[in-house]
Length: 121
Image (tube, rainbow, N blue to C red):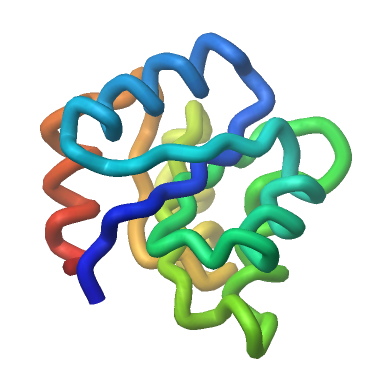
């Protein structure tokens, strides 16, 4: 499945702008959600080809939202890449256990993020 439409879930307007800019320059169509709950709702409503998920957010955190997306029959086929400041190896392992396909730490390296997306195609 070719990835064209990407949902970015992040509570920081600055991070949404930065990540959105990287993805738009990479040729992707980008939509946004500001927290875990709306990220899950937008995933179900819009069926994006990929979700880029922050972890530290109010309400449902990114680990919980990732688990909800990757275990729901309607959305489990949609890959999630976690994109967070939480760079410990234990965080990465936990994120992948929640169903994420990959894990990127902030500040985001544009080439790294784009290559991880390309690897999912």
